[in-house]
Length: 180
Length: 243
Image 1 (cartoon, rainbow over the protein chains, first blue to last red):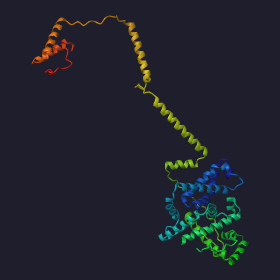
Image 2: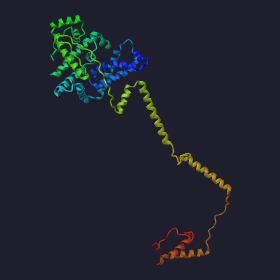
Image 3: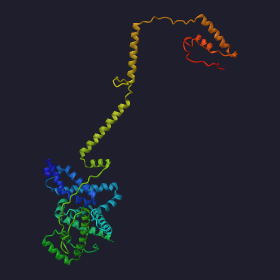
Image 4: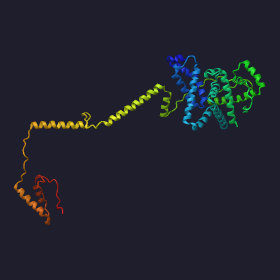
């Protein structure tokens, strides 16, 4: 597909986007925690991939290549958001992001509970160090295997597992504070 | 959730994670199942990590709108079936002009950003040049569109040149004889009447009656203030002289 895209086939890159957009969106959502940011990051990821199509080396997997671009885009966006000091608007957006997919017939009390819980999980994941967060997101949001994560991040399999273990322990501690 | 911070950590933490996410082979899963029955730390962590995992999955499902069915029960490893690809509709956002410009520069390649910057600089330089040129340019005196436009200096020179040419031509056509300016001589009657009038004016301060209209007209004609009697007076003198 990438070779076809390189030869100027306009539909080839469209196929790449169609095939990988869900996973990239899931990754971006897990990393950023907001639907709108995740959409933007996904879009920017594919734009960056299109621009750097010639920089793609055949020995790497397309998934690994796209994941690296996506992670970089997410980090860049987070940095920008910090600079813009959007924290004041973020709380409202967080709540909206957490409840937008809830069923319509759910009670207000239950909605509030879901919202609070989702917010806590989102904050807990966002608060993880980048290397741990990447592994959690790839495992929980993209449902990649340990082997796939290892290839994408270019780290040993045991490192992936130990990072996930550490991440789960840290998440448990953060969520425990929420439950208190 | 239970506290695990102070619990001992088992050296099989990686196996625990592999087992938790259902990536252990059948032999590995059987082996770890046997281990977890005996290891309190692993058993506790397995239960707690399952809760953490469920929380994340709940958040993900709420946010992404996908449904993940947990098939495993109890000690069985967690199974995460691949969900159907969701379609993401990229709704076009309304951006302000500044935001759109910023986004354009964000997604543009480096060469395009450079070219835009150079183009903007050239445009600014061109505008400055045009403004400075129009600032220095003198005002055009031509009124009609088809008239040639001259600067004020050019116009003065042209007028001077035309006047000189015209004067030269006129001098050649009608050479004027050089003569002394004619001496103005008034008729004797006028001289006498003027003298009378002057005398009357000089003695006017002692007189009680001023000149009437006829006398004033006569005096004005004699003094050459009006062309003649038959012509209209250019002005009307007051009936009463100034005191």
